[in-house]
Image (cartoon, rainbow, N blue to C red; front, top):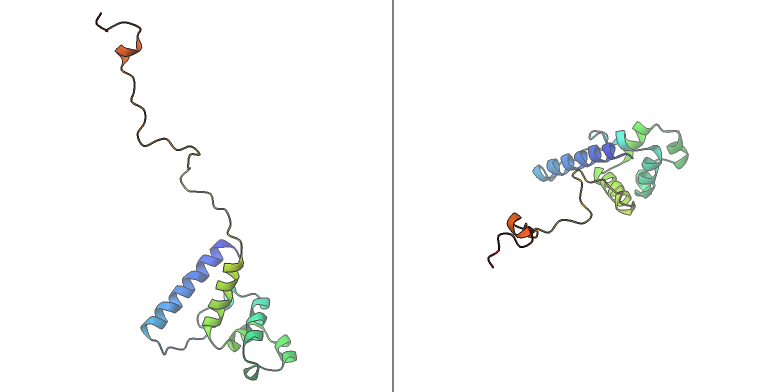
Length: 128
């Protein structure tokens, strides 16, 4: 999953949490939330196999179902949130280039005072 898809899915999760915070007894389906746009068939099958078996059709029938039908079997959209958060937590964190270049050896906040031009000449300007 690319970064744009992750960000879009994270926004969907945020939207779900906002709706649930406003109305705790709200029941939304994963299909209503458009989570199917981000789930590969393998993800859907992994999610379904983690659900209680008594609520699922015969495994042979699962293999013939389309992704839209499989997403309807996911009883709680929080299962999808948990699935992706677990995957993201286990994934290595990619190196991201900083937007503002960072110097390797940062300059001290108190730079050395500049030498006065008169004191740089040998012997000139000094009383004898």
